[in-house]
Image (cartoon, rainbow, N blue to C red; front, side, top):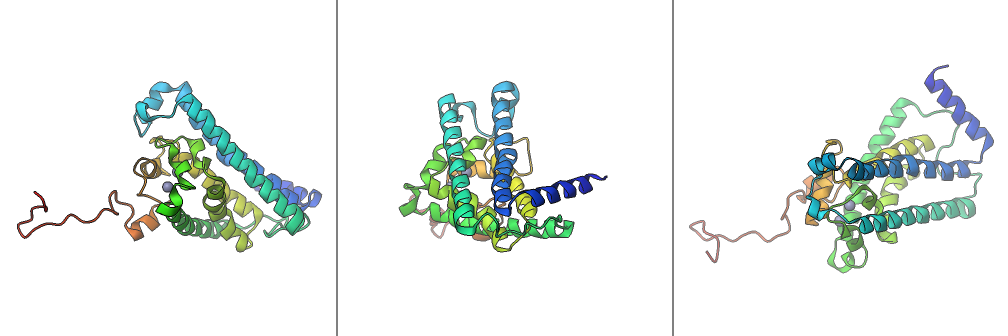
Amino acid sequence: MSTIGKIEQTWASICAHYKPGHIEIIGTIVTQLIGFIFPATIYLLIDSLCPHFSRKHKLQGAQRQPTKTQIRHCIKISLLNQLMSVVIHATTVQFLIGPEHSLLDMSPTLPSVSTLISDFIFGLIAREISFYYVHRTLHHPSIYAHIHKLHHRYTAPISFAAQYAHPVEHILANVLPVTLPLTLKGTHFLSLAGFTLFELWQAAADHSGYDFLKLPPASIHDLHHEKFRVNYSPLGIMDWIHGTDVVGWDRPPVKRDDKGAMKGE
Ligand SMILES: [Zn+2]
Ligand SMILES: [Zn+2]
């Protein structure tokens, strides 16, 4: 039997034996483990097991890197946020929707390749747009200090810092822009799981602080942690549209007199 055939048989067997809501909850936990905790741990191990390689490829200098205590604190908050989102998800499925139902397509047949690709592209665009506006709102002066300042504590980030955030931010910026658009579309669970795996790995890579992976280019979000008011979006498309991809976009333009000299020169 081909690999696809084995996957199809395994998935059909899971669908036959377990309730849709329970598959959704366990599937989401497994996705978090494979897509985020595993790569974030690998990036962290590079720091301690390969210090020479780490020094060579870190985007920011050694003096800016977090201490061991700060790293432990970052991992603890990140894991607590994941636990919180699992509890909210499980409670919603168990008591609001009911484990016999799911907002997703839980049919025992696998989605086609064309469906997987169109869902992936839809998810990428929806997340790019929604995350950009949520993230820029979190930088509003009246909100920033109360919620988003916590995520910016690590000016030289590590992978676990992707989910080091205020609980409200974790739900509004990390969870919903990835899961809500495809859930509202009623996509197949495996299509959402595949997209979530990619987004979680991208978040871990974006915050890894390393330059050796060019796709996704971690330098884009690393610069956001270093300079704050630049590069808000995951792919950079919304930043390009709004002009926020340039450091200093929000500074008033320098006034020049007729001779081209800056005022006050
Ligand atoms: Zn970040
Ligand atoms: Zn930010």
